Image (cartoon, rainbow, N blue to C red; front, side):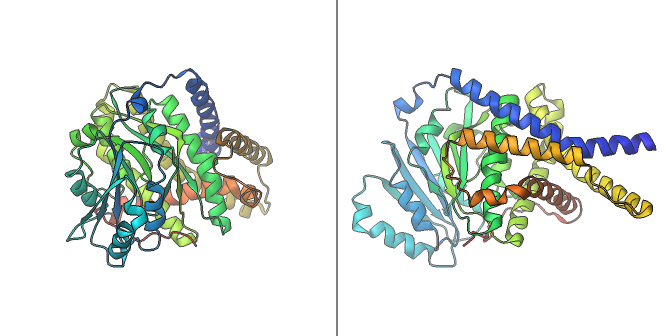
Length: 409
């Protein structure tokens, strides 16, 4: 029993350390590889791109998003808007924006589709896809702002005819609270590292970022579009593309500026949804991955499983630690381990700042979250992993739907 306890403690203690080293190494290799990559002429050829925006109750944010479309530095694109029966003033606001003389003078072709029933984001995207014939489709959200060079940067990664999707890098733009600043550091210093490492070490990423992803239309058609029943359509579509041997890649140079939750309730709800969607996809693809000959697929699956296993072992270890402390009436922290955590996460943040090249516009206010930065990430990972496992195991019924997110202040 003692040997089992030691294994549990070792796993719970060193898993975050090992993964941080993997992310740092993978992110460094990503940059090394990028220096030797030669982008082919996809962007020079300027294929037709359609920006596809699905909407549901977006009256407070959609105009900023639409304005960003008109500033895109690309010559051959149009825009398709699909409203999934919004219950607020989204339609009238969008219509007024389209009727504005200044916007009318833009050479960008913009089409509005109004659905008569609310059936969820995936259904809305699928309905719009039936009216799109572009070679590429860029999907984003109605509270996001595309960087002007986003399309060009995304297209530059389509250097292989088997690349089915490329996702970009979200940058947090609302930072009025500590929670907002912590997520700013997380997106720049952790999430970006994870995607760089997965792209380099596993031959592709675990999930696209639904706020900015460019799909090859033929790839979407081959997998029959988005699954209306998936709780997270972006995670689900990533794995269905992989099952058809499409490559799914990442570029940190295609930016989108996003709003994140600034209340703890909204943040936990969002992250639990992501974790639940990840588990849903894991179980749907488990048998296929186990029978697959691809080591990359197996590595991605192992990566996902190890995180969920760690959550329970971390809880067990903490309970054991507290029990021993109470029994012995002594309380001491593992100083060396904590120091390693702090050093590694600080190193990852510094690497992230260097790689970011101030694209995320990090300032000293954002750096106020640094003392709790690493704890924030791992506690979030632990809590949401446990909650999602309980949801999937006991309560979850597969159903894709729209929710009204906490978009900060």
